[in-house]
Length: 218
Figure 1 (cartoon, rainbow, N blue to C red):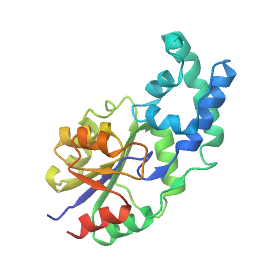
Figure 2: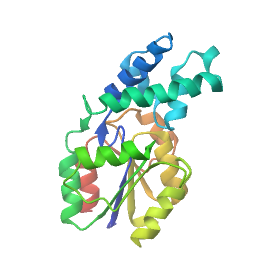
Figure 3: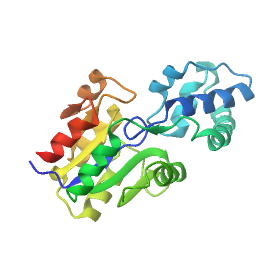
Figure 4: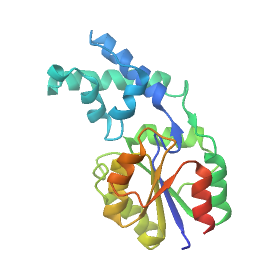
């Protein structure tokens, strides 16, 4: 099958953001006198938006609305200072995006990261490529796995959902792809594992961006 569009998740798919997210959240927790976590723990915390991540990082007996409301602006403050310290594209992403561009494949980003960070990361870390849509968490569309953002992108690109690859590293991404009738590709270089991706509807697994290139080549 020929694919005419490629929609990409951001964290854990295009960019390795884990260390900066973890260190920013740990710094915010420390400011509130709360325990911190190993960087690897944040693989399970991220993916459902900033509020969900903040809640998951808190001790179970401190996940009340008031504490979450205190923590989120501190995370934002810390992250604004350090989001480019270690974040970078995964190996092979440049080649994957180049292949899409050469083939005239429509490109878009759909993330649960706040819109301002999503836009900044694309413009600063992936400036060579033209993304027709860059959608992060905002009041405009519900967060993934709601398919509204994905359907908006596909409609705007005037492509059939079945001709669109959606690549992501989490179960939320695969649920989004299934709900929007996109071809969901679970990427294994990100934050989650094979079992989660398959359990949530991944149609294909990719161990390296080169596997996505192969799909684009048919």
